[in-house]
Length: 306
Image 1 (cartoon, rainbow, N blue to C red):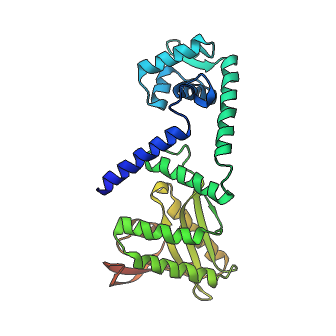
Image 2: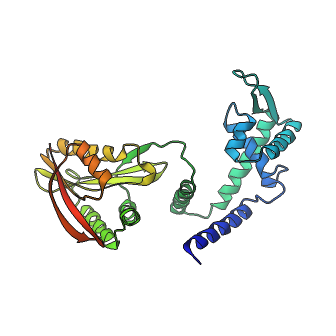
Image 3: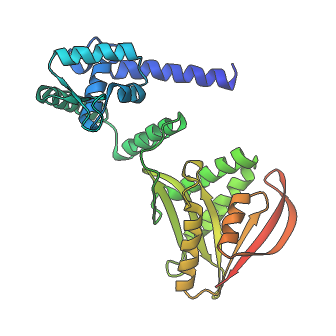
């Protein structure tokens, strides 16, 4: 069985598990008289204003004729109101009636209770892992997050292992570097934690939608020189200026702490990172070929005088 075949098999297995878990095959969802699609229609109308049937087709990826029958059924029960759009009289806008709002509130509460019972045996850590895994699945299968905004924070337990893990995977996927690179990252991270000087050193963790999407370290090399280390940004957070922001934080912090110079080591194949360093004012001061991580590379030292 190929890797593709295994993936298809596992996704189909999960789909069967999930439909059974949520009762999607039941005649009525949440022990109600409403099938899944009608509950989704009620949900969309409860949480969004000014929706027409065409909007629901796009949101739910549903057949036009099937949707029309479902809307008609809900309308006949007095749960949906139809009215011309105030800005476009030819466009018919859908909304929940008072009865529709009452029914939706009941279904929404029932759904929350069902999920609460489902996860009640999970620990706080397991719930966090579940949320992270669900978000990752949605992102990997093409869902675009509603907001692509990041925030920076200080590290917390688990971050250092995560950084090592993610950089090992990222550089293998994008540059085919072997696990010796992961060993180097582990060593750098371990040295930072063991020898951490909170007055002159810092690590920034970038988060987006509750997930770690990047990080960078500034480490004390001497009284006058700091080293910028392990800058990385996940693919999902690229294009937002996050890499530049992380480098800017390192520069600002280093100036505040009285450093006169920042140095970093990178490799010539890391074109995006090099562009960030150049834009920040770093200059290439040294380069030499080396064979590391299973690849022939050109190592580079860059420096910025503050």
